[in-house]
Amino acid sequence: MLFKTIAKSEFKRLVEDLLKEEEVIGPKKIGEREDGKAIHQFLPVQSYGELDLEYGRTEYSAKTYFLPYKETLSKYKFSNDNWQQEIEYRLKPRFMIGLHACDINALLRLDKVLARDSYPSPYYISRRRNTFIVGIDHPPLEDCFCRAVGADVVTQGFELYLTSLGDRYFVSINSDRGFNLLKKYAIHDVTDEDTQAYLEVRREHAAGQKPLNLHDIPNLLDIEFYSDVWRQWGQKCLNCGSCAMVCPTCYCYGVSERVSMGGDEGEKSRQLYSCNLKDFACVAGNHNFRPDPATRLKYRYYHQHRGFTETFESPLCVGCNRCGRVCLAGINPPAIFNDLQAEGGA
Image (cartoon, rainbow, N blue to C red):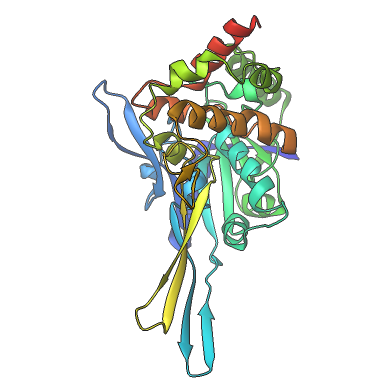
């Protein structure tokens, strides 16, 4: 990996040049909460001024641009003894600016399932390969726990990664595409002063996150499989699926097929789903393998922190706590883990 610095004014010029010809997506303020805090979303922008690179967290993650809530997989038509199928993949390049480390790590974890596993998704891969990612460092948020799941630092999965050093950015360059873009602008070699300033920022960010010990969570989940903690939290669950909709790594989905009344055309589509919804484990004969909220909540946590860890050697969760923020019942991972650890004597 290469390291350079670039003045913020020069980076602004870079983005403005991109906006002339390319689709640029970034954190954009869309409103305010009752307490005055800004609400942000990753949205296409038309000017540099629409970007808010000092945002805290977007309501939805960048996942929606790689694994949309609903997408058409194929369309087909029958005529006489022949048939035609139409499948579309993303080919046009786009730029996503301002992703935090946790959201980039979320994409890396989705890559393990959707790009490198036994059945890779060409739809996901085409979007991933044609997206130029510029990440940016940020101070830890009060309720996030990304450091506890190893998602507060990122070393891959991006082209450029920025750390603010006052009037300039410390830039980590992780790809040829990133370097080829940067070399068109005034960049500078890293000095000892830059290095010390960068390390100081990283120390401040590391010290600012509340400690949460999750090192033995996979074993604890096995030990506490029948714990009353699941019932206590599960009875609060509203089965709304909001947690999965804002989660940057949930990827459960259903596939449906619509065929015209004449049987001459049809469409197959995929739609994201949630394991917390009541009918998620319902099968033919109306038997439900997970009939109660406590069981569904438990298996959601088992997948994120036990099953995925066993298969891919890291938890699926990246600690952004979007699920905890959006949950109307106040269910959040740190509270559940604290209860499990207290019961298990951890």
